Length: 190
Ligand code: GRF
Image 1 (cartoon, rainbow, N blue to C red):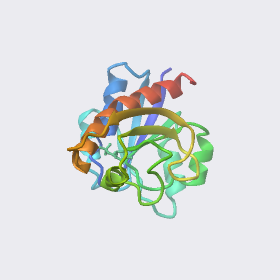
Image 2 (cartoon, rainbow, N blue to C red; image 1 turned 120 degrees about the vertical axis):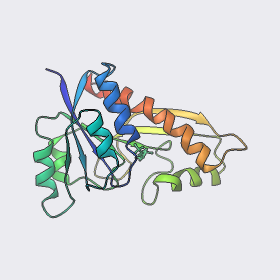
Image 3 (cartoon, rainbow, N blue to C red; image 1 turned 60 degrees about the horizontal axis):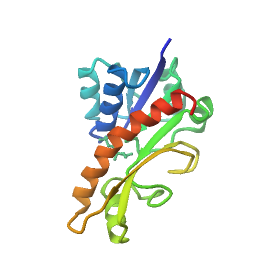
Image 4 (cartoon, rainbow, N blue to C red; image 1 turned 180 degrees about the horizontal axis):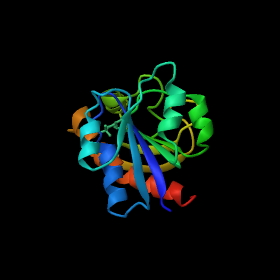
């Protein structure tokens, strides 16, 4: 039986990493099935894209029953992929999936991670610091934000005429390669 993956998207996320993971599973590039897409709100634009791909979706609101509801939603899954979810998962959920919760970050961790480092803030900070390269990181989620063992990193150059927006686009394209690759590695136990 193939591994089942749960993808947790954010409230406002485009869901492009979610789509990259779904497509990689559906094409056979990643030996797994996306069992469920979980969104924190019914407004999440990613829900429609998941439905169009034939993947079941569920809204789990971060209320007092968050941990319990999440654990129910991911029953039968062996890996959780965070794709734009901007909150820490409850400890009970992390404990139920040791080394099997992945996150993607749009910079080369451990630099440019942690509190306040999300979305365009990351790319602005990277450019302001005069870095000559950036990229993305897929890592195992631990209780500390943006820390945890790195599974895959992909890098790109920063050019003199880049803006945070052009850099964000280049990094996003890397993310769509890195996430399926990292998921395959984790499924193979690497
Ligand atoms: C990505 O940049 C990812 O690195 C970060 O959140 C963003 C989600 O984008 N964690 P998308 O919704 O997958 O397009």
